[in-house]
Length: 82
View 1: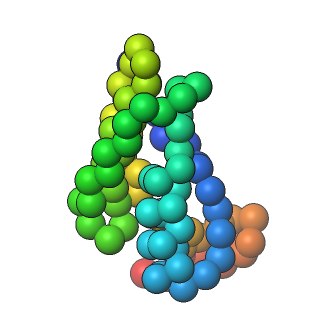
View 2 (view 1 turned 30 degrees about the vertical axis):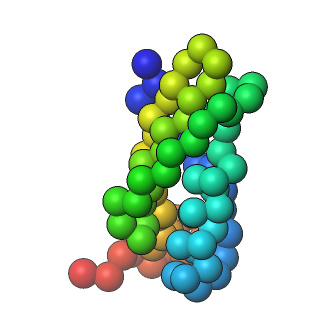
View 3 (view 1 turned 180 degrees about the horizontal axis):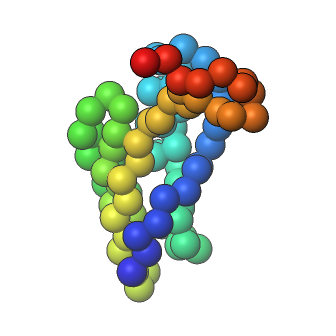
């Protein structure tokens, strides 16, 4: 069973654009399936969806969440604000 986290997409934009892109990712992501027979998308919040995709021989459940980068040491040498 997979229990890892991965980045599906990165983009710049407003919160509304990010939420729209998250729903688009949930609507098109195929995980390890060659052909998706059924897709169920459950809204947990505007920033997360539970996706259940059914193939011919397997079903996968995935939690897709929107995350905002708030600090990157490659971008700045200043510490996080207190």
